[in-house]
Length: 276
Image 1 (cartoon, one colour):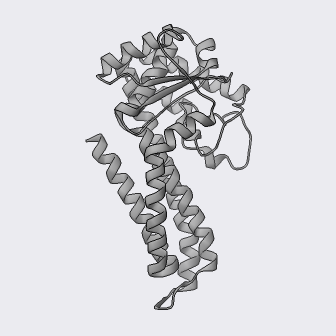
Image 2 (image 1 turned 30 degrees about the vertical axis):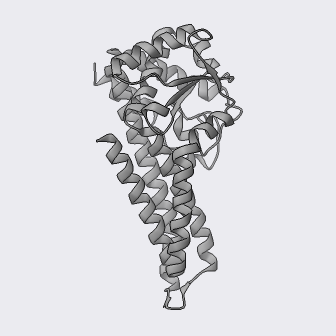
């Protein structure tokens, strides 16, 4: 069912992108948008995981090189009835983690050195459970596709300034202006809504997987505190939604809404409190 929901969302966003292309440049725009969407979805499906791991200089580890981490993940995957994902450690001081991959057989979990150094074993387990919950519900692929399509719609809106429909169907300039403003906003809202809901679901899944909501509450509080005090050197706005805590939490900037794909830590802790 979760896989079906994922593909349905991918299809819906792709159709929205194609429709918007048609509104900007008629049939030609629809064809271009279709080809672009097909290419982006193909790349996101097959290569986004390796690209993001490479970007963060993630180092693959196994039972011999990271025994404690491997044992925690092995125990949780058995409990969640999931295959063992590939494990990576990111050489980064800020404690954080993310999951990536297109399906159960191609999943990966990456944690920073800071997470392993600054968290207790119970907190690390809670964070890993959160990431495995993302894998369980195919959230990695959903997050990647929504971010890709949202960015593409924003880019297409920029191109809309140079197009006004086609010869067969001239477009009302006021309609075009409205679309160029509304569509990127709508795509961003969809991206943020999907991401925030998935974070809440992964938090609940982690609490049920470990049987200790308080472990994740403690981990989230620490993660938020450390993120406010230290920056992640290679943090990228396009992949910020993948992390358990927004790596830009401590950066004061006017473009904060771009990175508001996470609900507030206070909200997440409150919801976990209700599960006790």
